[in-house]
Length: 319
Ligand code: A3P
Image 1 (cartoon, rainbow, N blue to C red):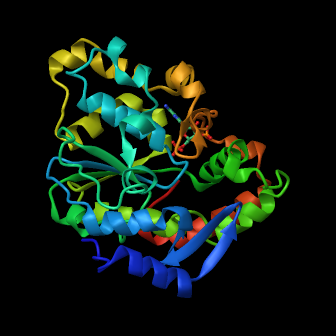
Image 2: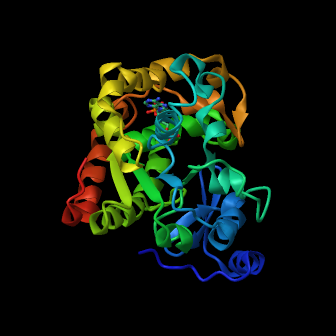
């Protein structure tokens, strides 16, 4: 189970932490340390509010990820699976809204502007997303029967995706594009939003190993290699399994095509506009496995191999 953070007053906790906390400035983003993880200061108040106020319902679906691990894709797929009876594929809201507008993130959306928004009116099942580590998510999520889907990605590709995302957005406007080695060094030391990445992955991995009905653990690479299989798996996990008739009518294939990188990245809505402080277009770059080879040196990849061996090998989690 998750450890309750025991936060009584988000504002006071925030002020206390900001006074006494440990900080690091990483690639244009100020991070503060809390419960062993690094959080962007900008969303820290919203994290404390989520912990304090979010009341999970048994029907909720929580999508959890590290940034740049496949969040946008997982949002699109889960939304499409859950709402497939409401909209035919050619009328899906995904064709006219960015996935981040259809599935809201706790700390960058729901709790960013309002401390305790009314979420009761949202139709069930509610789908939310978060980058919070497992030990920081609200206790009410762990106590309810709601489902958590976690997706992670090979850290070399995740870092490469992050680096490109940073340079495309305002938050990275002062970042030196040639300083990728410095940024990679920090990533490997754990200085990454919601990092260290290995502890983030291990938190959800262990939770999945303890209770696989509560936490579904996915990898971007697996989803890419057998999208149909994992769409079925997600649907079963959240209690929306496909019928044989749906399978025969190609509904899974339709969802897979609707949510594919090729389809989503080509929609006007995803080529323009913003979500939070990020350009919608920056959430779609290449959508490939192994693009790190075009950015990172063999020495960097060797360093990552050693790091993953020391941090992940014992858990059985591999990329
Ligand atoms: P790349 O930068 O490697 O292309 P997140 O959604 O967590 O921010 O992650 C963004 C990464 O997921 C980017 O990776 C992006 O291109 C990729 N992505 C976005 N939508 C996708 C989709 N529908 N299918 C596969 N990959 C997708």
